Image 1: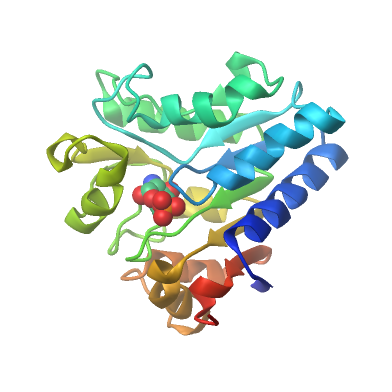
Image 2 (image 1 turned 45 degrees about the vertical axis):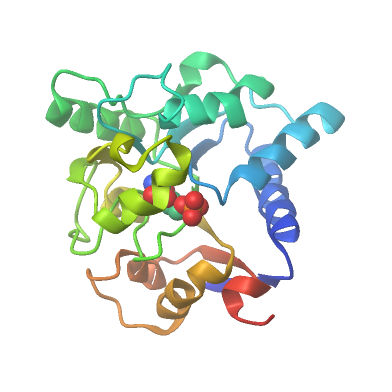
Length: 241
Ligand code: GLP
């Protein structure tokens, strides 16, 4: 894993956006894996600013988001589809049909998971996957204990994850209990991975990611075995301030 140390969240967001822009320019039909949560918000803001200023084109790009809450439809502000529309898709020139987020309101979640996995495979796999990390080491919504061989699947969320994500809802009770997420294997099959780690709250998780053992009890640890991972971490996450 390559580690890029930056001072601030602003710098992290700039460096991450520059990396994505570079890959999009050299491969306009790129298949991008995208993430939600607070961490990538600044990166998306920079992609939008660059699109406006420099016209980086996404017309041929295709995106696959990591995950979605079960029970929330795209018009629900808590849903990840809504988040992506608001934070990125609406502001760049990517055709709507080329953005993919698992459906949280399908009648048959098992089928939805298989169909999502198929869609990624038929697209030729993910070129660049953007990731955040949960305090407990989750990536996507792959909670501790998830098999490293998992494909897209239905999960029950850890109470600590629901607690951490409650800030995106008006009450804790509103945070869904289940989600659909790409599996660890789906993520590991990406050709390149960019993992963003920001803030003091992620210090322990970063330490474990960089130096801990590879174990299913800490899902992100498997990234140590991926051939092309870049971690961008700010001073607060690195414990240098
Ligand atoms: C959620 C998402 C993850 C994300 C994590 C960390 O659980 N499913 O993909 O990485 O939160 O979020 P944040 O960036 O807000 O700390």
